[in-house]
Length: 236
Image (tube, rainbow, N blue to C red; front, side):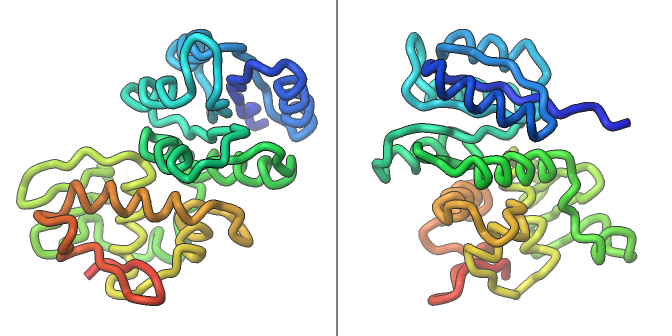
């Protein structure tokens, strides 16, 4: 029997925390609740969780700071849950390491779908079965860029590059489909795992921007990760 997945809810509004807890329990998850940023950070770093639901506006330490500190230590998926709608906050949340962003009021069904997709992706359950076990090369070489699919390592001109799980999944998918452009919506479904596209396309743009900063000599004039005007992104 599979062990239940465990979610950390970091939320200072008790009614919202309890609503999330009840629905997670009904969906078959275990959970813990932290009511402020400091408690959330401590629980995240000392416990074992499959995903973190992180509110942005928290007492003692805000969600941006919690996210950044967690991401320095762990690759646990993080979904930010907040009432703020400002564009810069969404970008900052994703840029500090969040995997997704949900604005209150949110659909519980949509949130549960995102939770499921992020957990599956983090557990390697979204690997393309046509690629896996079909004789696909273990090391993908694109000029100076090497992707070791067994060790989950990426190197450029012999130097290893530190990538987040999200960044690795994106570059691997594009490398396995070299030269083929994908829309942001297609990437949200194929890489992020959102069936029917439930995610925010900003997550794709932010991840591409971070990747370019790491693999391109001049991110403003990329040689590897390119944009197909009017369509989306591809690896050359």
